[in-house]
Image (cartoon, rainbow, N blue to C red; front, side):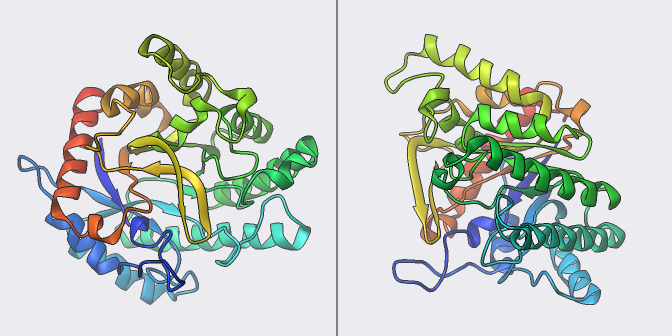
Amino acid sequence: MKLHNAMWPGLVGKGDEEGQEPPISLERMLDLTAAAEVDGQKYDGIDYFLFLPHTNPEASDDELKEIADLIQGKGFDIGSLVAPVWPGTVGDSAMGTEEQRGKFLEAVKMACRIAKVFNDHGARKRGVIRIDSAEFGVEKWREDTAANTSTIVSTFKEAAKIAADHGERLAAEGEICWAGMHSWKDMLDVLEGVGMPEALGFQADLAHTYLYTLGYNAPEHALVQEGYSEEEFWPAYEKMTDALRPWTIDFHVAQNDGEVHGAGSHDKTGKHCPADDPNGKLDITRCAGYWLKGAADRGIEHICWDGCMFPNATLENPDTWNTILKAMIDVRDAHGQN
């Protein structure tokens, strides 16, 4: 099982608005990743966000090949890609009007096209294309839950057909801020509604799915309450992972302190913490085992770290990446193939 680092912590929540930190360039993120080493082990690859300033999704084939050369030149393969499905990028809400849903599907097409360039180049050897509903917050969804879930399912079905035609698989990332994906049960309803496991599955992130157990944004689906005991937590965690694991085709190692967090337009979502955060709620290695049972049978060939919305000072600190790499090695040694 290969170990990847994500490039999007250099982008997500960053910007030039008041209170925001500037983005970190792709090359700098690659250099920070390349510098990490634990007992002779380094990162094998990177997972990659297909939007500015790291990538112009309309870049020419030659420009994309130059990016692939840059990434390979730092010693990395390319793994999972993040399609620019959100309003303000290429896409728009999967729950929206016909025009909005058309933009969403256009973003998936763009991602598939870039994936093919990277695949043909030889830089990309594994991984999926990540999406979510791109409908921020659950208030609008709650106005008509059945109809809105049905619209998301319909959009995802179209997106899955596009991906399948390109030889790709989509993974919907379960995160409490995205409508129709904001609880483990609602996420399962969407996955089962699409019913195309060969083309659309689930991406489990340890930080985000931890909040599923607490029922943030969906108290009716909470599996534990604040102040839970260990004896209460593990059966609840197993219930959630048993439901979503059969759909899980991409996996993020992460840590969470039980808080929600946001920056810029990306608000109220699971707070990623450093792997050794003293307030971290997760036994990373043990939690990962619930998701990675039978991982190879579902086509999972790599795991990725997600440190979304880390402060730039944290990202610039070499200790951050070595600590993360050590956590990932522990997960692989316990649950993956060496």
